Image (cartoon, rainbow, N blue to C red; front, side, top):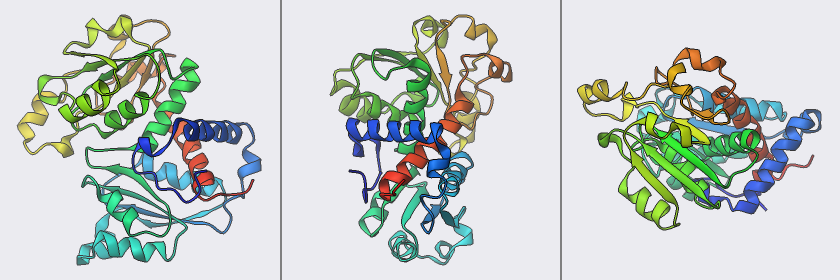
Length: 308
């Protein structure tokens, strides 16, 4: 069903296709040896025009664990992009060599342009402040694992909601599940963009509340999704410095939350989650990393139509 498709945003996947990926990821976790060589002879091209640790390494680990191989660049200065080559020409070239392309780019919409010029599947690994669909797969898999469901949840989204592409993607994905309530926790300068609020939240009849204080909503939450204030999205360093420490989750704040609330973060964190929270059993942001690898393995299996 997914063979040959592009993944540019979460809505490219139907709920049925998401369930198919969850089931495949579950099977990979239970039977890793069954998948260890299924991508033998397959090659992934990774085009990272923007820095990345987790996403790039997660895709690499996913492909290697399936028995495939990876080529590409981790910064544009090491490629012909530095000579002025267009996205279209880079993608056309790599599509001649690889079986799928994974792309991160600082400009919104760049992966869509890539998909228009590629004869192999293109996966968006993050485009500016727009979308990050495979991080959303990691987020959903983690929520599903530790809450046992993806519906009837109150989800707090905290920090940089204006530029946070992981937040935008997660809201889109959650909009298709029943009885999701959102608590949008941010300073006034970093509120969720109006287009996301109107075209996703309000259009789908989701309940939501915009709040300034994390403490006010912590007792109500099933999931707290923390984000960092992103220096790279600011044009003014003073604004970044003023806003970067607006929300810090520490042990005292965790004491306000319910015993079943889970804490997620797409990482990297700076100081918005204190190190002391890492030992709390409700902290699952490093589990997200592992869930992300399994979901990317499942995605590769399905997009390439691999036999297992």
